[in-house]
Figure (cartoon, rainbow, N blue to C red):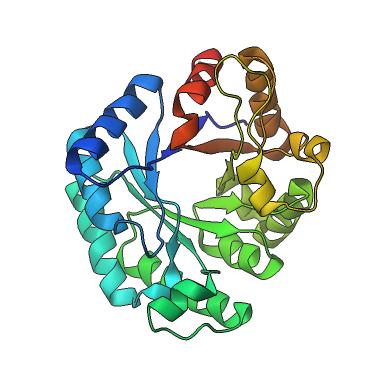
Length: 265
């Protein structure tokens, strides 16, 4: 059975409470279900921003997209997750990844272990959260086999990255077994045409797939092009083909993708 669509919006300008509140209200008006913040040094801390967002809406869910698990001790993170989940009325979904930016580890005066060690620590954090904050849904994002295997066991939501997506979904499905049907599959949309254009700006996509031609990038699941109806058809195909019902766009795509949401609903 196909899941209902969910749509998430990444918040960009979170430099003041007023800007966060305005972004949250816009997300509600455009039909988004979730507002999300990243976890990078140099950007505002996720939990204060999400607490402000929670106070601006009674309906939108809240998420991190995603926390660098290696920045946190499990008990301290569980305290923050539990508090935000309770204060928001159960609307918080904690998104986690293994971390990948060496410079951020160095700026935080933390060692940058090999990927295998970072994934081991991610699993340690997730196990602790599952035991001590069982009511908060856990999202794990990534694309490597080992990370997807951890996600298959522990996550309620899996943000699948990398390409080809079909191969990554197959790895997740094989690792999850009968549990796969209980997992919500998330994909990030990295390119959406601006109003008045059928072609998207591919600069964000190119950052993650520098070796692909424009034509190859336009074929990626996370890239939309064409009319609103054509984009909506592709989104339906993502759910039909991959089971990906939960899609996330960034703030710059909010209004353009909002028209796709309206078409789908």
